[in-house]
Image 1 (cartoon, rainbow, N blue to C red):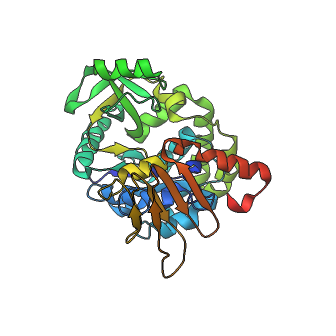
Image 2: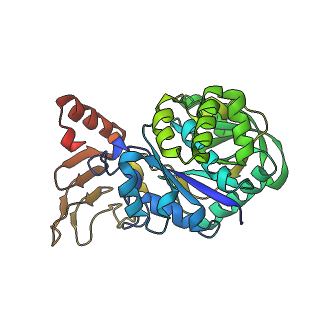
Image 3: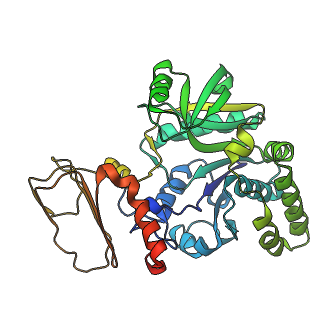
Length: 361
């Protein structure tokens, strides 16, 4: 697939993974699902390697995270790291990456993937991606929708329309995060997919859609393109990017554009949104515990323990009579929270910020 490029969105903060995830080491740079020594972003790049050459992989991240992200991805050329001077949500991010790729490869077809997802069946994932790329090559703005396995209220949904080529469907509409009752109806009807935030397109098609629906962004990209031709791209990005509209690609474009396609996928997807998901994706002992090797476990069930300290040798962990806990230790913090309240870890970050303890953020 000579002209295929992949853009990895790697600018998130991951506050629900405190104390492991910090401002300078956010969740995509951590091994939070799957192999315990593979950062999420490294897994994202690796699973695309059979389809995309390393010099066609682009990493979109914040200026402050470039060095740490480069370290996590030693096989990606340094010039392929696109540094955003300020976070402006996904529409400016994707617009800038698409424009950058188009300048060097006018025949490109682009896949945009989040850095922090977990995929259990990687071969099935690549098959869906290949179909999405073929549909995108025909001029569709394409996404992948996950076939729901439960009535989830934490995701947006995509309602599928008429079938098109290669197993895809026209998108009838995008749906906001639903109530529980509505989510149950979506699953029962079988016409709705989870919106996984993956996008596939030809740069010319994306640029035309941006010009139609996000004209302020289009004007900013025009200025950056003109500056790139004069060797002034870096300076003008620093000047222009903070002025671009802060809006998601879904709200700003996908929900409004015509000729939107979706390819259904079943490949063990998870967006790795909390420590609860880390527990779900981990290997467990016979009692459901995901704990360090040689942990002493006595009458304890369904716990997650992550020792992320630099201590050598590792300390001995022991659990007695506890269930359904998340316990995470770093060199400067310890978290203990019930698994069913894992989403509330971000409240700790809010509290530390309110106290002015920026060294813990």
